[in-house]
Length: 599
Image (tube, rainbow, N blue to C red):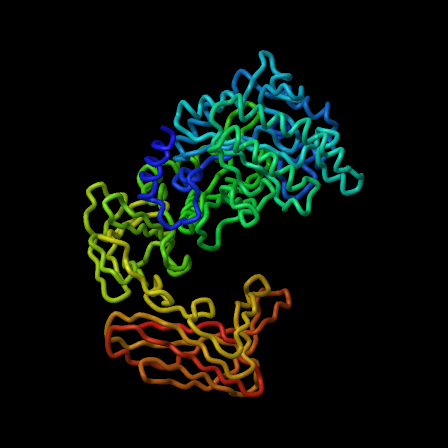
């Protein structure tokens, strides 16, 4: 019976998750869900980032670290629970909010680094049941609420660090020794039995989220102990997911279910295994009353979409107050995201990465879904709306069957032109969504692509840089931007160097190239040679001099200026190689970019 159920689930899910080859059956629901809620709530929520009038002693302002940062006595720390309004605290409201936000799973801080258990633990009296009357068990209440509302249930458990236990890891042990034998007493006396409680007394646990951000080779906990903990999870809850912050990387142990990136770290490359970004709506994880770094709805949506476009998940945190209420700014943003997902969720849930590079287009990101009938849909998420309502999609060589706005229930087709590797879509006159509009491109099968092309931009031209070059010879080291970006990233060219790009042009055109560079010689010297479609243009490099990056601060920097190289004829539609040869003489030439447009 169990085998039959697993097979059915895999068949249902395989219609949607195509690109993540290294997803085990346990993690299939996770890869399909894409979006979840993190909840940081505990004793520290009563402090709100302040202890006896003093703000948290660390500029990162993670409110949940106040016990450690402000060196609070353990018995004094729990007096913060006197500020909790237990008659108002209803964890089901958090689950309902997750549901409204479009989240598919929830992860709750059952025990954070402060060592305080938010369930009725028989292992330690340092738990919520001991300090409430009648005794509360927040883990149990959340477990029941998640089951009721169809939300997957995960638990955060701080295994490596425990500030309350005399032999748990506390970073003051970098000064004051803690032996492995003493640490083993904490491990065997608290971690293992508490984890056994959570895994046996609270129904299905879909995920255990550990928070060890270094490998075990650099910590007091051993690989053997971590394997002991993971093996117990596999024995008691075989389908429970385990993240890489257990202290074992996915490369070291293929049985780890998904990789956890750093705090608020978004993905930067496509992966074929499940991964996730833990993120905050503002800055702190636990509630901090003076934290006002609220991210906008658009920022949060773009983070979610960008991760999905690289096969990743996004777990967004809330930090309720001591009365259980969620700050208005958090609740407002989550509900707005939920409203967007009500309309556009098809482009996120069960969607995966497409085959083109993540930065191929300057207008946004692409996700993909293969439908049960074999058709493929590409979802174009517009982070920027084209000023002329013309959306250029470069690199897809198959003609779409239909294009429409995902928000259009009637799926009214949009006019478009397709030739070679360029599809140009005529968008509606107005945005159909105030945050991230989504355009759907439907194909009978997985569309063909042409890799290595520099895309046509929102402005209608081609921006050719070191990042999208197909070939670079000679000086190729990129100098990063400096002085807060007033000096742009560039290549310092000291010897003859050659750069080339591949573009697709959809018909006969006259293109005008501009090149941006800085040259600090006193007289014109060196040359730039541009070539395309069998023709070439030459330019004598002129001094660009200096400029002032920031007035009245002696911020004197090299000036980067663009120079018109002339014009070049493209005889017909097709793929073209754009070449740029830079030949310095006595002084180096700092090359920034090449721009092509029709004008």
